[in-house]
Length: 69
Image 1 (cartoon, rainbow, N blue to C red):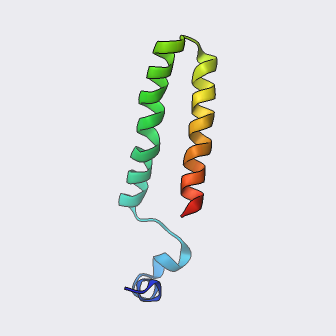
Image 2: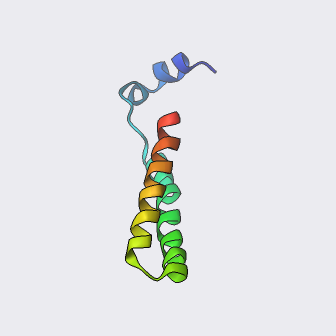
């Protein structure tokens, strides 16, 4: 199926809007590693600074993944 066919059938795709299922999927994709990973990092290092570093690295990684699309 062509991208042009998808845009013609779905006017929201032309504006770049995401449907609610995709938004929830991205929330889970980004939220779970942040929450679970933050707890694991805190368990091993015991400082909030290490969590901030982990979250910053995670933010850059997820940003790169989403920008590559």
